[in-house]
Length: 300
Image 1 (cartoon, rainbow, N blue to C red):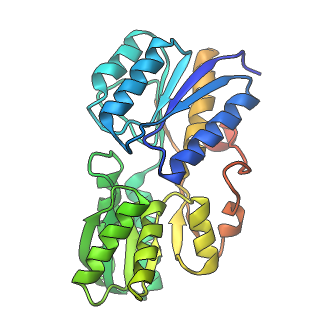
Image 2 (image 1 turned 180 degrees about the horizontal axis):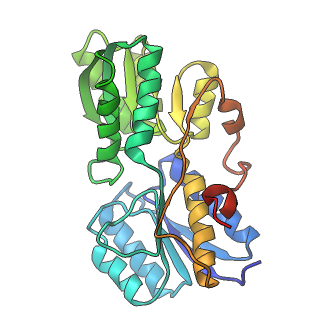
């Protein structure tokens, strides 16, 4: 058991279930390790000013370590530098601020995982069809590589045509609205690749409201998405699981605080999840198995 380290965990928002799950997992793991964890997120989704204020509050409380998924690649840099200068271990998860020398960054290859789930959709469509893309919040570091991955996968399927792309801000409501507008513009959409599950589920809602059908894929392996896959409403997702990423970050923080080595970059695997293998993921965040350090990283 670690001594009672005080950890602060800052996520991007309170509205994306993936981040709700991350806070649940981080708190569960911290408690099991004998640590105290304070979780916080902007009330306005992905608001840089609010996250900066929360980071300043965390810094003022002098925690033993700070874990954060930055909402912007540069806006938080001045405050993040204060954390580094104060000698407080800093762990990025999901997203990073590239100019800041954090102790470690826990992530997965966003371009590769996006290409994998898009490829699953294109194969399902038989290599031909008209596809729409729902992109994430432009300021998010994960948005561009996921969009690149979707388009890279499409380049391998000559019969796939990307007919439209819209930003859904990584939110259910944003995905629903963006999808509704694309449906108004296009009489035919065979498939939808969404940069996260929240938008994918919003797209499914918009399709139902319009009386239309399309195969939909997302990213995150959220419980609601897994249920949608099991019901046949959604085709697939990817196990880019914020709970696993942040829990690996908690393990990393404790290792740093106890003098053990941690790589600067921890890139976890992410697998496509569909009807054939989704049963293992059909568990609420409160009951999902927590990753061990060695199990997640392969490092003893």
